[in-house]
Image (tube, rainbow, N blue to C red; front, side, top):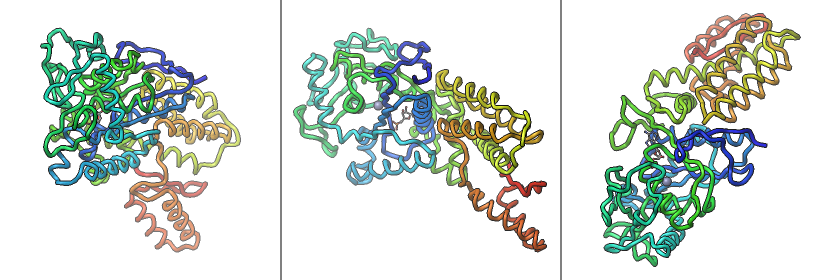
Length: 468
Ligand code: AMP
Ligand code: ZN
């Protein structure tokens, strides 16, 4: 039996115990990037919440089928391709490749499917035809619109008031505000210079909202478990997805809706349109460690705003270093033959607290707090009586669990050099000292100091850690 997990469901506005429709198998859909530019770290915060969600569900014993779409046709991608005079494919291919580089650098696990909207045109057309059969659409100037007055539940996710809407008022843009709630476009009549498809709906192209409904149902079925995005997706995007999907099938579309709060900068949403954004590339060029960025972006629970600052990023880097330093210190200290400086039940209690945090609507702050308390206890035990082999084994399993879920345990690579490289230099220094070549030994120490490595000569040999 998978472990119990609770989520705050945007639809019901309540914390609920989660039960997938199919026992042991979670089907989830994440609104992915619009591939007209590099993603910014606000987008990545939302994608990282979805990565931690996936990993947590897996660690808790569920099989996960995850779909993240790539919006490769909308107002923005069309404009970008036209501005450069290249085809939509060529333009979006570039940013899709960049997106995968970014998520790899941040240690994402890959989802099962990354569908592109332009590969699902027939499914989108079919969905519009179904909506037409059920009386939810009308055509105006060659475009097909969804008549929201025909869908009784319109507004149930976002809580907007549809009574104000003037019958027949329409909106063509992919993105619009709550004040503009109107009939929205499903299929847009072709315009000169825009990509278009010849279909039974006439020559044209899909609206953004239609893409997600069609791809989600094509890959996950008419009803599935979890749908996510950031809070700006609630209206109109997800409200429209519900209208399109439930309007066509007459069945519930999604059971649990989860929405991440925004990454903000000085009180404002980080957004391309505001120009207040950093891409991952910007931060890596300034020398920041991708693991520290990952740590920072997952450290605040997803339902809370995260204020981005460089102080926060430095604190996250220190958190990552502390994990690495403690683990290295543990590895370089011989096991204690006996003793109770750290007992197995304490490690078990840590895992319980860590999982308990995540089971509580993915409270990553609580999980990280538990981890740092454990690291303090490990350091205290190493200062005191040492840690036995048995307890070390439990610690290793617990840390592997932490890394499986959060993906923040440092491995060999870092700007200072890999662990293996540094180990080799430390070994060379030890050999130089043995053969009384103190000049070479000092040279190595200086080099390591410059790289931010601190050496400590102990009775058991030299141990090292990265300066925190
Ligand atoms: P887009 O590429 O604009 O479609 O956005 C991709 C995802 O990032 C969507 O789920 C957005 O809601 C989300 N997003 C956009 N800006 C932010 C932000 N500042 N913080 C968190 N998520 C964001
Ligand atoms: Zn979407």
